[in-house]
Image (tube, rainbow, N blue to C red; front, side, top):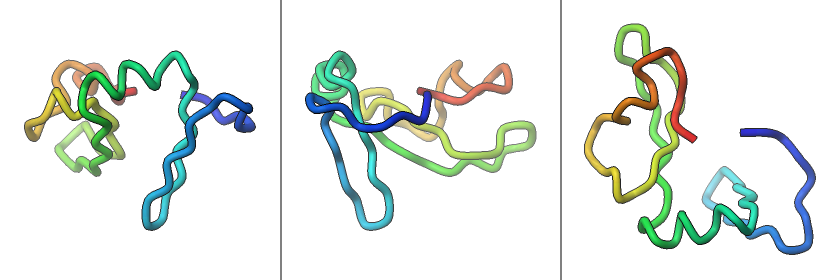
Length: 72
């Protein structure tokens, strides 16, 4: 994940308090998987925001956070 200025073909998604800018090559993956879920996790060594595909569902982020990383 990187901070960048929005490009002409980027998709901008606004929620109540957050704005997400998604590159065109990622839009298809998000759409095919039912969107994104942003959740705050505070579970021992895993603490912070996790971003995962909606199709992954559940309360866990799979292997994304197992090694100190986060999803996305």
